[in-house]
Length: 297
Image: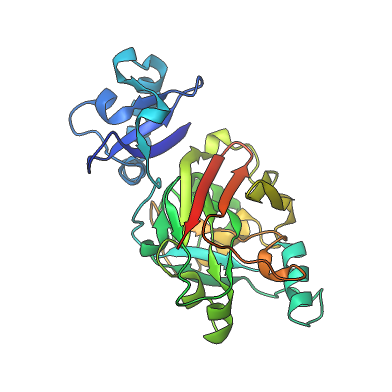
């Protein structure tokens, strides 16, 4: 099941699902009075609402089917209740390339999970513009990431129960101003300028993702492949991330956790290559769709 937040026009948001033939089912219309109007409300509704959605999907009335190109697809969670949680330096090959670029021991891996956040003001949807922010940064970079969407609240979640708290998965582009990241001595500022978190195009329910640790991922800039990897290269896997993040900290339905990026980022290239206005970023993860955004001045 693939769920998305969309608008047929104006400010009216609706909950949709992608059908097997690629059409869009307007779930807000199909479910009738009191129906959720976005993915966040679907998640909050829990299992009972999800059962109603399954029934609607099985029937998929023709009058509620729409062509995908007839609507505007938004970020599935345009304004999460909390900052987006992000795991830093979580892919082995990315850690190695980053250490080399910084003149450190290439195999100096983190001993504990490194975490930062991005505010909701960074979130944009598929097809939306990413601002260059040239007045504030000279080194703009991209990062493809698998993102976990939390479905059930929990604190101190043990590893063996972690996946029970996952609603599904989506794609995030952790756009980063590398010079700001370095200048401020932490990661928040360099990763938190407006438009720095493209997300989408939809959330795929965990039942449709057999193994989150075996997903191919690819990022292209202007058709050139820059990042290509598999989620099996994670240092801390999805259950470990949920276990460690939830230690003494309550996760809530609709929370988003970006799980880190693989090798191939621009700042680690020789010479470094940064994003500029006009560049198109195209991100793909197996089964999760394609997220495309363009950099503007």
